[in-house]
Length: 189
Image (cartoon, rainbow, N blue to C red):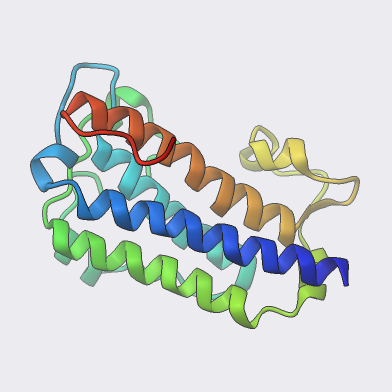
């Protein structure tokens, strides 16, 4: 019963998060998304591309499904840096730009739709499945999900909440702040 309540909550929170991104995308244009404020401040394009591409890549660890991002998507979206940037510096990622905003929106929605469809069919008992066991590889050991993990490691629930939901909220906060730099308002109160 508890796993079912958790899954229901997760499904509703994920839809709410995705609706914030949809609202943000619908109220920005390409110039605002690609706006360069100054050195050391990544553009909205970074936060948008990073979250979509990270969720897409993380989904493979969680479900075994191949990421959506491929050479065809890269040719359509035309990012300045075809990389989510997790292991790159801010100095590198300030150069991220999106070439085709409509194609990017299609990619982000394809990633989000896949997550929602997966959650809709997920057996609640799966939330307890171990995704990454301790001891963690170096790349995982320094992450927020490693801090959240239980004794055995990162469960599917931990991964879903940390890698998709909480990570998505973090970047939505960046987007909300950056919207102010381009003359737009925040998304929530």
